[in-house]
Length: 271
Image 1 (cartoon, rainbow, N blue to C red):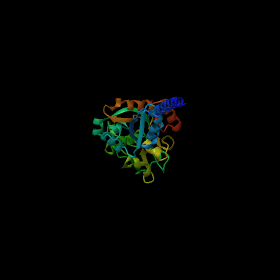
Image 2 (cartoon, rainbow, N blue to C red):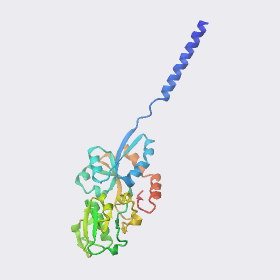
Image 3 (cartoon, rainbow, N blue to C red):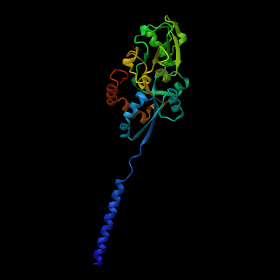
Image 4 (cartoon, rainbow, N blue to C red):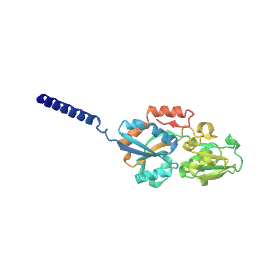
């Protein structure tokens, strides 16, 4: 009897050991993930990044999205190593600062946000009164973008060769004697009650509840060169995490989301 009990005890202990080992195998930690931290302005950039979080997680990449309300800080943060990448700007803006040009690069493009002229008081650009005040962005590339939009619609004339970095000093004909107020780009939607019109970046217009396609007086055409890009430090464009982000952001899933969410053309995929 004692021998039988001993045998049963041994068998039970062996079975228990196998059970514990099996449980330990089942409880083994998941494969470690890597982190990719990307800075972005909220709409549509952060929206698109959040849309692909699960796609990257399936590849072992934890995407952390940090939102910013200005254009300068995300570039400063990438330079400092606080961000792996940012998603908020176009190439002319990146090219407007020598330090950025020397140390940062465009990894890939995703979409265009058409730039427009908006007003709370007029509905047609021909109705701009003499002496009207127009607000434009105070950074070189977007300020020039605003002036080029006005020039393309016959409101002002710029000197030959003014290009994307045109300034108020490049205006050679101003038949309506317009006044220009230069403001930080994020403030432009809030300036509409204080000026006759304002040229506003697409993302800030969307954040303010404006539809570039429906609410603007005039808007850039499809030939716009201002593609919104993901930016990294030089050399990091080949980082596997960035390449995975490129595949995710330039996917049919993202294109379908853009087309459905901004069916009026306020955001246009470039892939």
